[in-house]
Length: 228
Image (cartoon, rainbow, N blue to C red; front, top):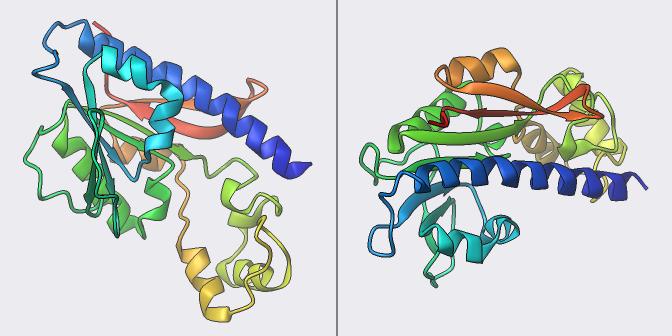
C-alpha cells in the first residue's frame, strides 16, 4: 500500500514538474532563435531518457530541443535526434565551456553527489554551463525521505542510528542492508537539502515547493528562468 502510494505521488509530482519545464522551454522557444539547424541545447545532469519521454518526444521535436544526458559510468553508445549520452560527473563539467547550453536541468540528483563540498561544486557547474537552470530535490524537512520511505523521520536520526536501522529494519522496498560497510555507504549516498541551503547554492533562482495536499512541502524546485 505504501509503495503504491509513493508511486502515485511521484506520478502526480512528475506531471506538475513537466508543466513547469514546458513553460521554460516554451518561453525560450518563443524567443525565435531555435530551429532544426540551431536546436535548443539542454543538459540534464544525472538524467534519463524515459524522464523526457514523459514530457513528450514529439513536443521536444516541435521545439527543436536536443538533450545531453550526463551520468557517471558507462553510457549507451547510441544517440538520437533528441538525446546524446555523455559519461561525466555533474560536479566537474569542465569538458563544457561556460554557457554551452541554453538550459541546465537536474531532477532528484544533487542529494546524491556527496558531501557539502561536492554539492556546491554540482550547483556551481549547473549554473556555469547554461544561463538558465531548473533543479528539483527532495526537501529535508518533509518527514519521509523518498529513498527510505518505509521509515518515517529516518533522515532526521543520528548517523549511527540510521546505519543500525538499515541493517535491522526494512527501510526501503529492497529490504535490509546487512553489511555494515554497505549500510554506511547508503547513509552517505543521500544528503537532503533545506530551503536555506538551496537558496545559498542557487541565489539567483526563485524557490518553490511541491506540496502534499497543498500544505506540506515535499520537494524543492528552484529556477532562475524569468518569463518575459
